[in-house]
Amino acid sequence: MKVYELQSNAGIEALKLGERPEPKPRAGEVLIRIKATSLNYRDLMVAQGTYGSKLQYPLIPLSDGAGEVVALGEGVTRVKQGDRVAGIFFPEWIYGQLTRQKMKSDLGATIDGMLAEYVVLHQDGLVILPEHLSDEEGATLPCAAVTAWHALVTKGNIKAGESVLLLGTGGVSIFALQFAKLHGAKVIITSSSDEKLERAKKLGADETINYKTYPDWEKKVYELSDRIGVDHVVEVGGAATLPKSLQAVRIGGRISLIGVLSGRGEKVDPLPILFKSLTVQGIYVGSREMFEAMNQVISQHQIKPVIDKVFPFAEAHQAYRYLESKAHFGKVVIRL
Image 1: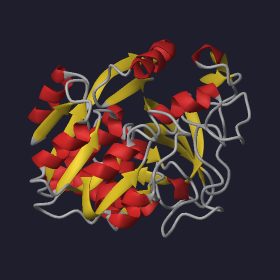
Image 2: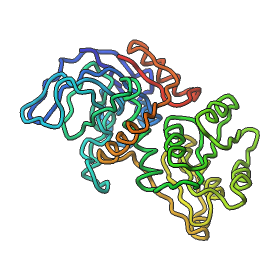
Image 3: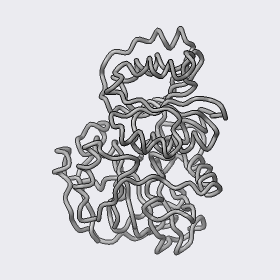
Image 4: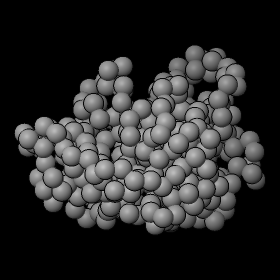
């Protein structure tokens, strides 16, 4: 079977197309023919070797993928042949709090991922996809969608009438926009592109801020929130944006720290967290239980993920480069 492997941590150039024997499912395992995969910023970090110290190469990358069950190992009862499924980011995080044991394996990093024609996963690490979604749409869910759901719904307990600040228009932020509007919240979203902000408005964003036009965007957020601050911030920027997010959130509000798009290592003043009695919550994707709860809501409300561009399998490098360019709005997908 054809697979893509990262041969080293030398970046996108280290991604090579190769051949491996088709895997065989053992007891409790499932063979899946992959139909589509999607990219996350984390996959760029894996390619560059900046995603932790436990990466071993060669490695099949990507945590997100969707496909069809084609063979079952002995004792498999959770799925059947023909089911359309996606893998969960942490195959051992089924429910409850994240622990060191549950996070020891994550697809496309510490273990092989989804950028292959066939993969074998344990039945416990699978979810059934909503029927109304295409394979490409289903492939967008495991990381970005579950992360946004975890931040706003599972931990954030978002309610109608509350306000949410979203940074940028990548996968997590656009899913967060959809979930926030579903729950009746007011959404403020930022971008450096007026075109992207117009697209966000069409998805329901109430207020938009071009952070190039307004470099002190936290002050604009404060004005747009009746000089109170927002209830929730979905913080994907990291060190460069977190100080501004601390100013933009209301007293007693919540910041869900998700990404490091702007980098790491800069000093952050902790006093606003203390003085404003803030909850700053690290969000590291989510469990199968969260994924399944999210899928029920996605099915009930017929929510459709936003896909910017779909690349064929042969153009995986171009998909990586497109994500790296930050030109995308929503998700970038590779179709097998």
